[in-house]
Image (cartoon, rainbow, N blue to C red; front, side, top):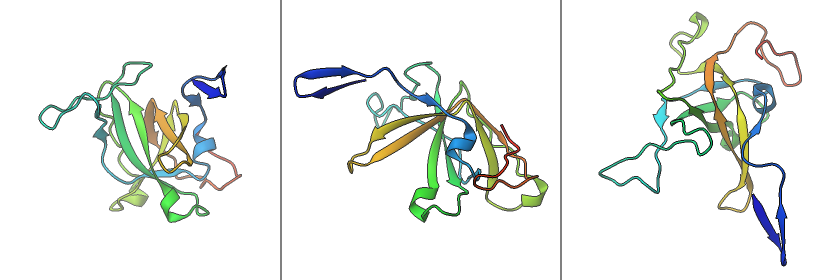
Length: 152
């Protein structure tokens, strides 16, 4: 990543995504709230011929999973986020636990999570999340901000 300040070029040591733990991003947990969809390469796709997007580093196909952050202190607009999963096939959303049967939410934990900060169109800092997989989160020992976490 390069940035310019006047006539100087600054080369940053940190390149690409930053590996993070699930607990750093979702300290109160998160819930899948929609369907898995394939991410499309907007530059290569046409209306008649959609082209799947691939991760620039691994070459894996990318799938988008909409989730709701369970942090009760977040404003409504900040609770919804999409996490991209790198996988050769569409990831399956786990079955919800019996205690949540019939509800449209599935508690999950993302594995191999990484974050990429960027400047959004409105000029504010934003983040893109990628993961290598997801699994059902345990409902035993509810997560609380700053409390113990039962999922690595």
